Image (cartoon, rainbow, N blue to C red; front, side):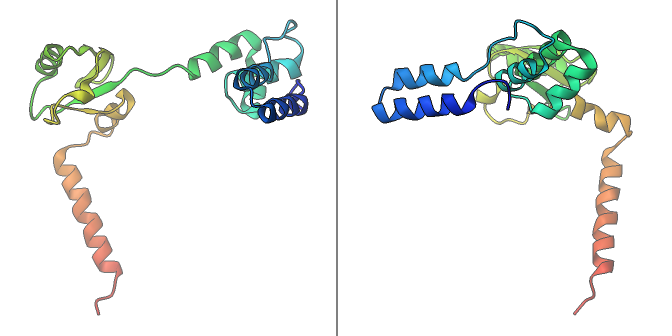
Length: 176
């Protein structure tokens, strides 16, 4: 059991559902959500609170709780639930990063350069996805933008790899 009466809360929700009271049903649903434990050393209560309230699996919360303690685990599960910022990769065949930022700014989209990716822009305000699909930039997280830099990929190597794949496929299948 996770440290709270799931069966009792379920029975109460069912009773209220049959009665047809949406407000009371919502209150019963809320009652099933555990509150922060008064004693963080109560492992079962801490697991129930962190896992259910912050939507993380018990096995993962238990591992972090054992390794890092309640406060660090709570900060981590809260961080995991934050929505990341939208990141764009500028199509450098169409514009520089600065020119793309200026174009986006004209469309009320505020951006700032990404920390590591040289062609990336992090969106701070606005929605660049409402712009016309002109190929100026593409949605791609910053880590993914770094992969070609790390492996020193070039357009020629991509073509070569593709050609090798096609040749390998042709050689494996007998012609009929």
